[in-house]
Image (tube, rainbow, N blue to C red; front, top):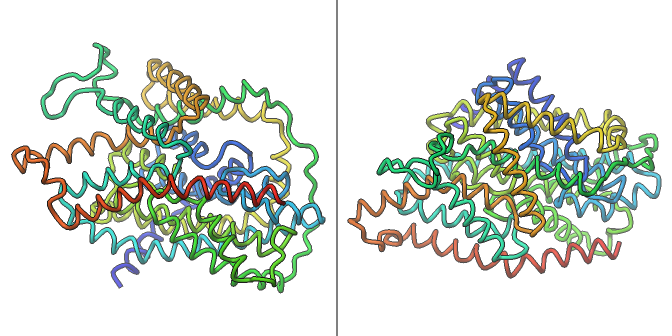
Length: 504
């Protein structure tokens, strides 16, 4: 009953005219960003964070808009997968397997409609799971002390390989770089300067928003300039929608099962939407056995990965909201947004900022309904926009980022700093070093250091305090597993996904 009352209060926040309008705008922009190959949800949210500050939105409104962008981008990734056989982001890769063959058979509109319905069902299941599981996990996490929290931060870094890791050493290097940058500024314990080099703007440390926009948005622009990808795709063609109710009913069992599988994958720190998409497709293929035509344009082969990746995307919000650990690259960016708004993610968030947490959860439910309503009738509009040459879209994206950053502090130093981070992001991506661990190190570093110092001061410097309770030992054990398993299973998963795609 307590959860239901909190959710009702959340609907009171989400259904105000302004928040409803922001959710609608976020859903539209997110779908558009997701449809453009290469941008993806993490870049999309990073680009639009400055816009939220520019508009002077209150925290709950800013978060509602950005989570709507996140959900929209997860929906939008399927459009280019089905029409162009180019996934908008990695989780949408599995959708190519049956979506593109359907498009080649003249059923592109049907594939897009089916994927929209499946995405809605997957998101709905994950939202229900989020509502039921998050408060329980948050209450449990209230028993954590500084030693357990430190172990939890180690767990967050240990599972980074699942989010981004193609090369373990490069992932660890990126995390170390982020942790090093998090030490810049005034030491809150001693008051001494650390790596400020006498520059006044560095006394308060590095602003997360500037780092995120530079690393994601500006580096993407530099890559665009390098590729000179000036042309849109003029070969995108849409048939008239002839979907029948029985075709929708046929995909519902698949969507329900896949949404559940995706949610479980999303809740596991480091697993991410890609794993949710892959597992959902594989599990469904085995369940259907000889009755499936997966790989030949089977509508259930479109529904399974779409329901799975949307379920995983919403499931990744569970560890972010309850423990302060991002479950995906995009939730890492959202985490930075929360910290910038002076909101500390974690178990206390459900007590100290209940209206924000439940407002965002309610907005997810509303946003999913809006996305379903947008994505079926307006899919032709998104397809038209998809054919606009990127040379017209990318300057607009850059302009939004620059104006947004300048409007936050009116400091030209911040603009230079953003460009410097953009160049750094470009170089790191050229070296195939992932960016998310850098952001995570920068973001979690100060809290990790604070909890380590607190634990050591309580134990008079005895390091064994970090693994002195059954709970902390359990977290350390999970962290070790989280460090090892992605590096064992990750390459197998990627090879399997690539092999399936190549066979089709």
